[in-house]
Length: 167
Length: 189
Length: 147
Image 1 (tube, rainbow over the protein chains, first blue to last red):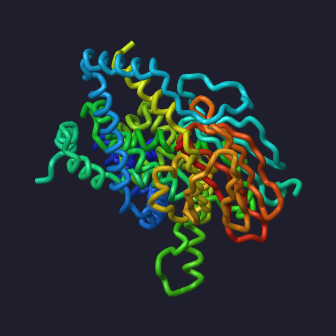
Image 2 (cartoon, rainbow over the protein chains, first blue to last red):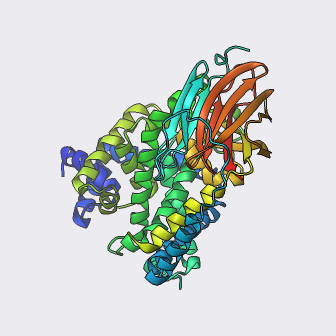
Image 3 (tube, rainbow over the protein chains, first blue to last red):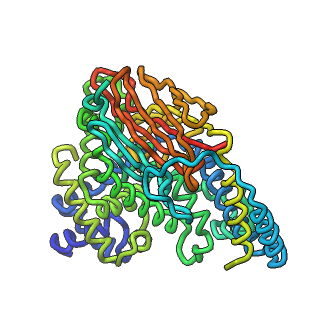
């Protein structure tokens, strides 16, 4: 075992990832070589520093609410799964009856809506849209607009220091 | 004798919520350890911990038991950390005051060990900050191998499964990351 | 098409046609956003979404109000920091509530917008932190539901 060999193997040695005979050979060499011994100790010191830094930060973390948050999310997952199972199980006859009843109701012309307002922007499609809000007009200074695609949520952000216009 | 991870997984699949709770409590600290090392902020790390177990619950049917449960969890957590860091770069423009503070997350190990000597306390805190900063300067892939090895104690084989890369890649990344850290922390270590 | 899905879709269309006859309810929640610190439990389900939107990590409710609003009448909501939110519901179109929303800081208009908000949907306005003010960034959550 030479110093060059040890330099190549020192990481795996420090991690105990070498076969036993090789571990022994490296250990014997390092015991008699100051430079290689220093390499091994250097890795140990690095290990200690990194572990301590992360452990200190971990100790400051409050994990007491993790389970309640996970449980709430799990409830949500279970509810979605349960709904899908039930929807698939609805008998066709019951569904047909519901369709017929709804059609009769519509044919009677029951409409309770407020006075129509002149359209400002393009009409919304009948299908569900991903965005919760559409902006037809926007005025302001130093504004930023952002949409979060997963929920379709929009935010209009104003820089309070420089924003604002008119009175 | 405590039930194995696999037993708890099977029980969870049959609807035993307490079994999943036991898995969460068994591994939340380990997942948090990886998250807090990868990310800059405690709240982000907590988000990742919660999301990791939520996804694990949602996709428990995908866990086949051919690797350790914690390996599977780490993989989920690592991917979430990477996603979080990708989003970091896109979020800056709505927080101009971030530049005013000059510091993104709380300093690590700010309290340090409890020696009486104030200079030593300050020195310990400074070392902690330097080490934390050096870790942050690694790429996510290099940071992950350092954390999984030095903090979580995973074998090269386990790390390769978490990161979905060959064992040789794990070894070379670890070698590189260690030399980088040693170079930046030369006078401290 | 799945008959069950068709029945559900028709039922939903019917309920929406009935909605809006009596105006709408507006809910305004003012949230203080900060870089660090805890978040209110009621906002935990929204934390990840807010984080993705605005980058802050801590969210605390500072004020909230629900109010019935009638069509074409302006309602003014007090917002922390001497601000106000004026909402003028104009009506419903398709499945959305149409309204004019103005955010004012004293008499200074910060935002003036016409929006179509999906019924029971939420939209946000954000005000960045001002130099010299210690109150942090503010997020105003606006939710509308036709009655």
